[in-house]
Every structure is written in structure tokens, then in C-alpha cells.
Length: 354
Image (cartoon, rainbow, N blue to C red):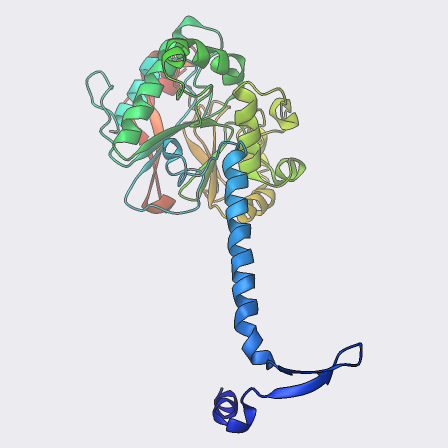
């Protein structure tokens, strides 16, 4: 910098004519512009070209149809998922399989104090997040419509209050959820084009406060086979459930996240695959996985030092005696998942008596 300043101040470096020859042999006198004097002009041209490039990119993406995002920053209906950002001020409440039993769902939400204790229609959970682990519906039964309508209303009220409700897709949901959703909201779709063909808060998986939620179980092998992206798996499943033609291969597979019992059946008690689980969780930068799909008669339990939680306890009255006598049990995660508590009704132990 100093040297350039000194050269600039030196009279001997000022522009002066210098003779040079053209190709035709003629002499001409014209100033020779030093390299440093030409640089600002080149920078201006480069800057203008960069600005034009940015404008073209913006125009291109504005005219190109975009796939739905599942980022909570871009979609308020998925607030808190999927994201590894921890929100310590809120609770995350995980509710097991419901199988179309609205009363069982209301009892579970009341147990967690996220809805009022009367009819359960008012959201009282503030910024809390509820994750229903799947099999929300039982499949083509009249009561399914009432259950889906109820949780859709609670989702709306929770979102407006700064909280959220999300549902993972279960095997029973695959039978009926897309068609039932379209039927329930057909009138709204005719009047308001903003009603989606399928709700984005129902997905194949959710991540909230460093916790992975899937209905069955997810392995690193299956994730790798699907391209290694959990977000892509969720998006592909959502597009198919929304009426898309391409059904992801893993959706109907027994080892996929909807059907697998890798961490929920009796075999997982006897020989838990904790190393494989650690590989998956580390890859996704999460601390634990919560699953349903298999009724645990002993109640909510965990394996692999709390890295896998099984929360299907037969809440529905059509599944086990737990549902028939109104027992309930949910999983509560606080302080970003660092504190995990099982919330139970007083009738929980009686519900498992034979």
C-alpha cells in the first residue's frame, strides 16, 4: 500500500505520451494506462455482471414451482420439526397409537395438561409440542373422521398459541388418512384454495428437540437406501400422500419406518441393536428415537440407555383393556429432551391386570 502511494505521488509516474508502432508501421502517440488504473473499471464490470446473475437466479426461482418445504422456519404448521434446535422453554409430549379413539386422545392430552379438562377443545399448552406417534386412525371406520377433525382443530389452536401438533404416519393411517382428509376439507377446498391436499403436519417422521419420532422404527441401512436424507424421505412421502403418483419404495416395506418393529418388539428387549441405533442417531445429530406400533403391556419403556423409547400402550378401547377402562400414559420431554418423564393416570397399573 505504501509503495503504491509513493509511486502515485512521484511525478515521473504520471501519464505521458509514448510512441508505439501499429501493425502497419505507423507511429502514434497515446497514453499508456498503468495496470492499476484499469482495475477499478474491471471491478465495476465484474460487479455489474454479478448483480445481473443474481437477478436472473431470483427471477428463475420465482417462476419455478417449488416443492413444499418441511422446515419449521418456513412452515409455521411444523413449528419445531424437523429441527435439531433445542427449545428449553417448552415441553414435548409424545402420545402413543390412538386407532381412531378420540376419547383416548382427549384423555392423553388432558393428562399432559395441553388441553382443557372439560371437553378438551381449548389449547392450554402454550408453546408445547405434541407428537402423536401414528396410527391416529384405525382405517376406514366412521369414528376416524371425528378423530381426524378433532386433532386438526387442536393443531390449529396450538399453532396460533405458539405451540404445535404433529403426527407421524402409521400403517393404519395409510389406509384412510389421505382420502378422509380430502373428504373432510372438500367444502373448504372449494371455497379456499389455501387448504392443502394433505396436511404438512402429518409426516413419515418428525424431529423435535433432538428427538426422532417415527411410527415403527428407522435403521441407518434403510435411511441410506433412501438416499441418506431424512428430510427427503419425509417430503417424498408427503407428496405421495398428497396425491402424487410416485410411491416411495420404503413405505410398504417391513423394515421401513412405518412398519418396522426393530426397537419395539420382544426381540429388541432380548437383543437390542444399540450400536446400529447409535449410528443412526449420531448421523442425524439427535439423542433418541421414540416409536409406537407395538403395544407394550408393561407401559412406556426404553432400551439402549434411554436412546429408544416405546410408547404404544394400547390407549384405544378397541386395542387392550388399558383403553377400555380409560387408562392413559404419555411421554414428556423437558429441557430440550434432557429430562424424560412418563406421565400416567392412577388407573395405569390396574389397566394391565389380566
